[in-house]
Length: 221
Ligand SMILES: Nc1nc2c(ncn2[C@@H]2O[C@H](COP(=O)(O)OP(=O)(O)OP(=O)(O)O)[C@@H](O)[C@H]2O)c(=O)[nH]1
Ligand SMILES: [Mg+2]
Figure 1 (spheres, rainbow, N blue to C red):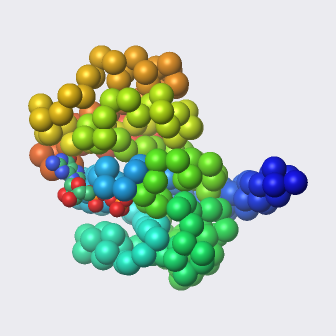
Figure 2 (spheres, rainbow, N blue to C red):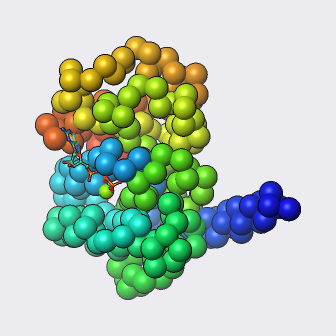
C-alpha cells in the first residue's frame, strides 16, 4: 500500500517536471539542478560561477532551503534575479519537487523569466532526497567536498548516478584530509562511468574556469 502511494507521488511529480522542462525549453532557458549535502559549497560555487558568467549569460537562480533566505541574499548581492523557496512553509521537505519549481516560476514577473538564458536551482542541502525528485531541469550537477570523505559514491550512489557533473570542492583542504583521489575516481566510475569530475575550490578559484567553460558549452548545446 505504502509503495503504491509513493509511486503515485513520484508519477505526479514526473508529470509536473515534464511541464517545467517544456516551459523552460520553449522560452530558450537552459536549466541546472545543483545538489549536495549541507555545506559542501553549492552557494559558494554558484557565487563564483555567476561572477564569471554574468557578462556572457543572463542568469537566474532559485534557492531551496528548509529555512532562511540567507542563500538568496548572497546571490541577490551579485545582481541576478533570485527566488527563495523555504520548505518549512510547506511541510519541511528535505528536497525540492517539481511542483515547488512550477510555483516559483509563476512567482516571477512574466518578462523576467523570458529574459533568462540560464536558470540554476540550488536544491536543499541533502545527499539523498533531492536525487529522488526530477524537478524538470535539463541537467543535474552535484557538489561533494573533499572534507566529506572519498567513500560517499558507494554509500550514497543515487545522486552520483543521476548527475552529469561532479564538482569536487574544497580542494584547498585536501592535504588536511585522508581523501584518496584514486579510490574516489574508481568508486565514482563504478557508480557512474559517464559523470564528468571537476576538482575545484570555491575559496581559491582553482578549477572554476574549466567548470564555467564546460557549462557555457553545454548550454550552447
Ligand atoms: N576551505 C573552503 N571552504 C569552502 C569552500 N567552498 C565553500 N566553503 C565554505 O563552506 C561553508 C559552506 O559553504 P556554502 O557554499 O554555504 O555551502 P552550501 O552547500 O551552499 O550549504 P547549504 O546551502 O547550507 O546546503 C562556508 O563556510 C564556505 O565558506 C572551498 O572551496 N574551500
Ligand atoms: Mg547554500
